[in-house]
Image (cartoon, rainbow, N blue to C red; front, side, top):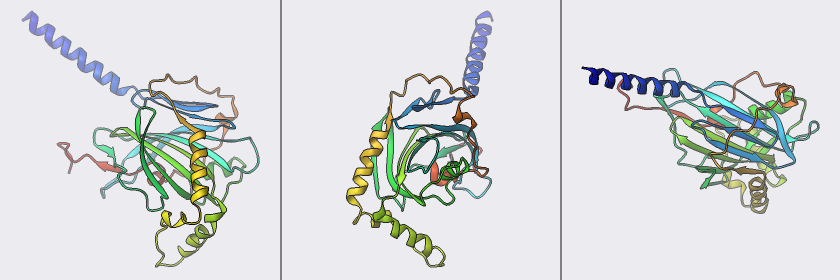
Length: 277
């Protein structure tokens, strides 16, 4: 009887330990040279000078899903980096750590390139498999462009972005993105596409159609992006939190929620759960 009691006590101890571990929220921190996430995120993304921290924070945002009923909310922890403290923003970067409620939801795999992507590749960096895409971004309606304009900076009408996305666990996604003003060789086509959206029969933007006249510019942009954003050891400890008195802590955030489909991805229901329909 004593042995049985000891076994039950040990079992309860293990269960309590697992529950306590599950309740520990992963933390993310940013300093002037990078973005750090611990816990299951276990990621470190560095940025090179002259990019420096402009703002960071976190909230929850609704994620589009593959089901008709209420979609899930995910955490949206982010850091934004740019050049200087005033004037136009021609180069910028941001990082996102996003977690879906689990069990029940997972991130949809990014097995296909976006329609607007000029390139798509799989690489290994920072201890994770990264989906890497290059695509244009329209500033109008973009949450991170709104961040800059709300804080008194001007941004280009169109960006060219290099986007790294990793999914270390089904419910966790890490994003890093480097941006520059879109090169002149594609701006006319991008402007024409925006104008065409006023018609009901407009065609989706095909990113690869931008390449024939912009191959050299895109290659040079990609090299600058690789030099500006670096992926460190995933086990590296988090950096000290930025002082609340720092200018980055005082940055204003856009009132609307970000477009999670474009910035992070799409959620899907884990259908093999007993209660899943």
